[in-house]
Length: 291
Image 1 (cartoon, rainbow, N blue to C red):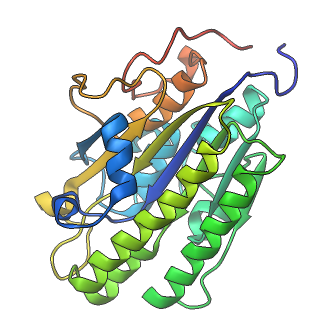
Image 2: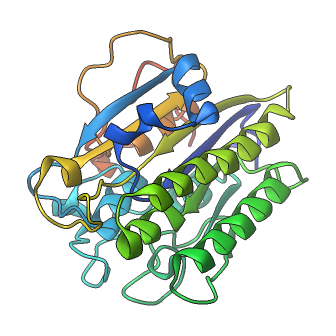
């Protein structure tokens, strides 16, 4: 058995920004996402044919590294899931590998035992920050508080080795107002929050950070998702960190690759019994087995 919290300087931050359309990013001022892409990559992900273009199934796939046939989340009500068998990476790392992990956000099924959740069942530290009402304005306030909490934890003494930060305002804005000017402005605001998270981890120069930014699905022009259109099925992943070479060929990316790369970035070889469906984006160093 490895000694408690003795994993060395590698750290991973996953930032999930809900419902960001890939086709609009070139038109927007997103310098912090652009910086991640320049240091690594930003590439499209197609939600596969068996996965509904809904937040519940997509975030479950991202967090667990397995598809819907295994984790069993088929809608925004997470009931009937198999997350006890296929847990999210923050829970698995904390329970199996004794790593400090952290998750924060404001959408109930991800963090609370409601609507069939939580997806993030047992990280070392969890913060749920509820929006005061279900409006774009309230979600912007929620995301601001989520970002502040994440910065506090990432710069503090807790020193999580793997973290997940969820920002939901962009998706809520699209649902209420469509993908017009307010939606575009919300994406730019989310990018500014990403910048604060990047500054937090850059302030820890003695640690090797992998940063992954990911969205779950797109939106139709009038706002909304759940169908099979190209706009709804097109998501994306951006990442930078050790072993990620800017401009290197990636091949097709899948949502399942996010959790797989989290483990690789922490130099952990997944147990074959986990039956992960994803693979690391690139070979991130030489993995070692941590028992």
